[in-house]
Length: 235
Image (cartoon, rainbow, N blue to C red; front, side, top):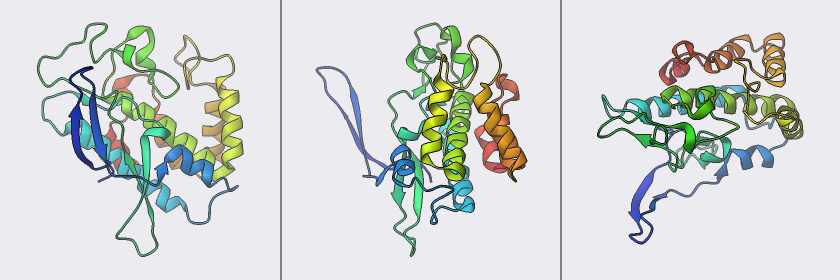
């Protein structure tokens, strides 16, 4: 399972904050990319491994979304810093495994659903650059919010894997110029030109299927966006 194991949880009565204790990781995905800046790609990270990890992350999201039948559960803060990198203890080659972690923004309607502004499902609790477009104007987040976010992370990891860490850093700077919304144009249901350019590059350079999956994870209409289960099957 690509979810970081949690050993215990506790809360401080003074501030009511909750804390979870999970297994120690080697690093997070952001640090992993920075520590392996090779262009075009680190030798020990092949494309099969990369897709297997994101298939596992999509399955992890599906488990999060459907683990309590009939109840709404979502992570809502999928980003490189919240995906931890572990060494697989069962691997003779010390393979790395990516796992979802950090539940500070996660929500669940374990009692009565609440979709009012300011409620846990309200997007006032999340922000750019990986949040989904339905969060504009204090909209309501959904399970497919996580799919959009994972699509953003997958695109960034592909950029790093194919073009190197320095290119990814420069691309992020270009992406953020004059933009506060993340991966789409302000006030429009359109991906940024910088995002479209990278998707087109994938299409023209031998990764059409992967490009198609990322594009379908980043559809603006939630009803047309892939579910986590569909991502796991398609990737």
